[in-house]
Length: 305
Ligand code: NDP
Image (cartoon, rainbow, N blue to C red; front, side, top):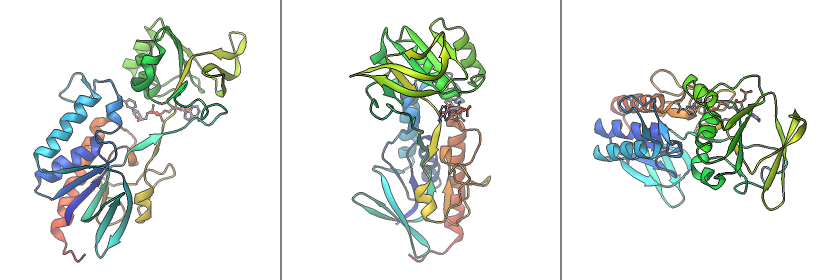
């Protein structure tokens, strides 16, 4: 029996595990990708204490810190959760665990581009991670779809390999953080195409062009070797919903300032929550808050499981 099982091993989950371990709770972190999304980011420049650190290094440090305080880590996917008395049972593919409470730190998955060709060329010209697949586009032409900070960061990273990078955005003006906006303006390789949607991806064995819904420089067909999709993310809140946890219209778990959900004994932290400002540091802070709320919950209650 665990005091707390944390589902999700990204920044929020690892920070929660570090803190609940430190508070003396028997803690298990279950995640199919320990380290989480941050491991797919090259340079993090806004995590206090580190002027610049790679995502993989930050995740490694958080993991080490959690283990230092006794949190157990299991690299596996939680596939089911249910009530067991006033405790919870968490199942992975091969194991079941009982816990007095749960912290959901399940994060998000990429929103997929749903146009003809996107699925056919996935991983063969259509990608969701420039850090993973950007090196294939050395001296080639790549495009990023999206106008948020992720799109900007993907484009900046791609520009270190590719000879040309387009950002294709459906709105009037892309909205990266101002430091990244300046870097894009200063890049000779990056060209921003606004008020345009990709409506089809064409090619034979490999991608050859993105079809736009308007003409750009005299053609609707933009020649590209690869497309990187950065159009936001979808929260992974299905397991929480099974336990009656409330979500907002985007599917994000609603939490209060103590990282409590509407269900007693269930807390949430990080990108899966309805917090508007989503950063590694806000996820870590929510994780720690959730751990403290879990600690109070566990110490105030009698358990019959
Ligand atoms: P965002 O939700 O901020 O941006 C998604 C972008 O994709 C928007 O420009 C949106 O357009 C566009 N879009 C959405 N759906 C479609 C579609 N179907 N077709 C075409 N375009 C579409 O997501 P991000 O991943 O950029 O950021 C998520 C969060 O993570 C933010 O809170 C951000 O601040 C944070 N972040 C932090 C980083 C950091 O290191 N500090 C790095 C990256 C992200 P529209 O604007 O028209 O809706």
